[in-house]
Length: 319
Ligand code: AVJ
Image (cartoon, rainbow, N blue to C red; front, side, top):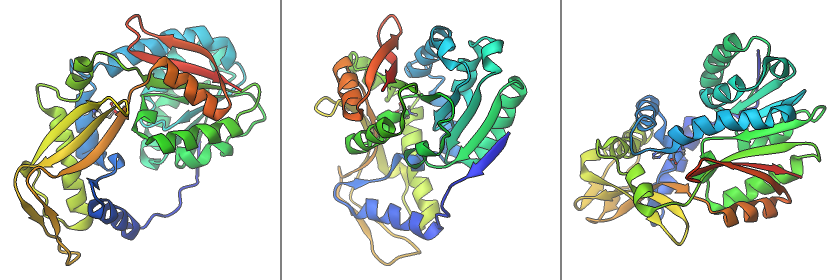
């Protein structure tokens, strides 16, 4: 296994600037990438096991059944996974691909976290010694053109991660991918589908309150970076389906008037009771949205693999 590093050195200073800019903006926001410190990643892990959080329960068997259907397309390919994380999804996917095909694959995980990649890459390599692994430590939005086009490329973007991007970012991402892809390349994109609003809202308002804790943990992450004195107990977890934008939105709502101070800067962050911090969007798609997305990218939808209830889809696109 080799890992190539393309991450620019992002100083703590610019991380602080980013957080401050978000908290100064109106309405206030905190970017969802900041959920995932050690504690946040543990809480997310717990979310994936919740009865109400249906996504992994559906996506994992779907990864397996889809891998079986597309495995002939994987022969001699560069298998690129955008945002590979802990490699658990690709592991399920590859497990359903016959060994004689796996032997011909070179896997290119792309992720911002070098630690996660080293750790999960080794686990994957032990499980599938026949696969070449070439890790790319980079932001997937900036790095899809780093993958050699000497062989057919099979791009994977699992886990509904695309759902966290804004509409504008999604368009930018799809356009770039459309430019990078060649005639023989393919894309397999995981998207969570629009469904009964109660099912959607329950998935982000679980009865054990784990999602609430996950949401509030972002305030502790902010405290660690910018020395603020946010008390998570001063905020209420709010998650609802915004029909107009077809997305679950998560917010933190101030339970009372608050003044947040920091050791690092003089300015105060003022909250009136009921003011919110927008922490996450999780877009949900219709078949129409899927075709529109392909259109923007100059790609064609060649297949949509879904579960029986059509709750989640793995969309295959070609140029
Ligand atoms: C990891 C982005 C797929 O949007 O459902 C889970 C994150 N947020 N519960 C999602 C999340 C609240 C999750 N993704």
